[in-house]
Image (cartoon, rainbow, N blue to C red; front, side, top):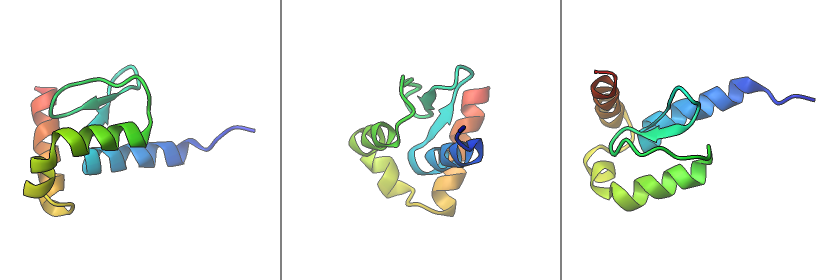
Length: 80
């Protein structure tokens, strides 16, 4: 029996907004702030990285529209 992929993609969207991570071309999570790549798609690893290194980002942009806009700006700079 195969897993449902729909839920996996939804989680990656949550990672982008909550922890400023995107999925790179190889399917690995990449931090938008430090450009650091992780080898495992584990939410706990991404959350730990974000909370330990970017507490000021979390304080400056609390969850919601402000953070979403900041993450979108980071994504635009990543693409450029």
